[in-house]
Image (cartoon, rainbow, N blue to C red):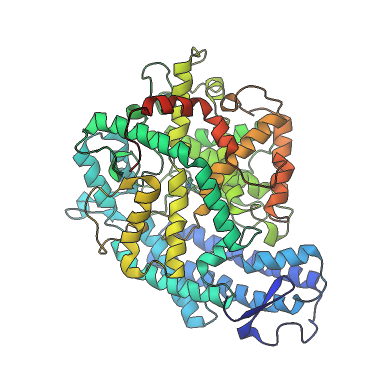
Length: 600
Ligand code: X8Z
Ligand code: ZN
């Protein structure tokens, strides 16, 4: 580590000589923390208002407003971290010590403590966000423009190789102009992280998990090793089905699968090609999209449906302001960032979601996901600002997904979205499991590789002239997919995925996809459920709801291990629940894949 010494559990930075304990601080540690909580609360509220307006109304003006608001937040943090060093070797309450730790890790991209560089960083960040949100591919002039929804829709609906290829290639042109900005962003944010005492921004991200960055990296590796056999089995089976559709010359044995064939722009989840992957077509009707359309569901009704799952667990109804302030559909007359998100605007109950909801099963699941964030926000409102976040960021992403796992056939039948009284048979079970697997198992390597790439970029192991090449190396290695057409360093394919220009750390999703099964199991146990895990729904179960809320209310006030222990009786993230959940499917896949040349 560069230029710092460790005193107590807080770092003394070389650039901040004199800050470490040579003069008694003016205020007590508790007073200091209370003041920082108040200041941050106020600044982040302003920032959230500006961000909300920008993301729901992208113009050069709102882009500037958000950059300015962000500057104020970024200016505050390093100064507060520096002031906190005065308490480094003093005896202070564990709460204040933890708050100072959270403070240090509170930003996804800290800026250097130089006004010009800070302004440059926020300008670039908000510009990349706008570029992604407003992106369109216009092959032949303005009338031919297509946005992400439209191009993604082609992938969902078309089964024609060339049509899908055109949509995929088209979208991947939008990120070319981001490359230079991204490179500058990396340099500036790294400098900010280094001023806080981290080696680089990747190390800072990995430091947010109540263990050392190295231990965290090892943890993610351990979890990946646990789940990889599940993915390998699914990949092999899917390749077989895609070969049937497109031919072995286009989808060869022993090779990665072309990335444009999965019904999803990033091949991260394969639910949109369930028609090609369904093990026993015709055995069960699981077409929730058709049911939503037939029953005339609109965005609000879909969100209400999600809300009523949470209230069935004893969570409160959403505040009236949620319905007034949220953006639930894509506005017709302006550019917005459609990528779904949940917002805690003022930490006093102004909670919202922003999503371009269409009546599809995917979007239904996504609202349940987003409300998971919203109910987390509402559950920890009583915590001070610095503890108003997830036990770790994987927890935050896992809440709504845990509820998704309870949207079983029984639940969906109960709310009228699949037929009631479908015959249960082993074939129906395998169909159902496949449906969850294409969402949950397919995602795992993608969830891991994104930050594998960014960690490399931030550390310098992946230099700018290898950005794209390294991206595809990782996609091949982890996902077993490859670019369907030649790529070069003219392209910047990472930028075609929201979380790269949006600078949202991604390991959180990998963790969430493991944790949600652990949570699901713990809640099903709490509900007294005795059958197979894949049939359990906690819908309507007050005790499961109580246990869930108890964990959520902690926010980040305790190490995540404490929160996990409270709910699941263990201090380790662990993939055995996901393995247990998919046991029937895995056995079936082994049989299906026998004699096939798996792997790539
Ligand atoms: O970004 C999201 C959520 C918003 S927190 C919709 N997800 C990841 C993605 O879309 O890439 C959920 C699953 C993974
Ligand atoms: Zn989320």
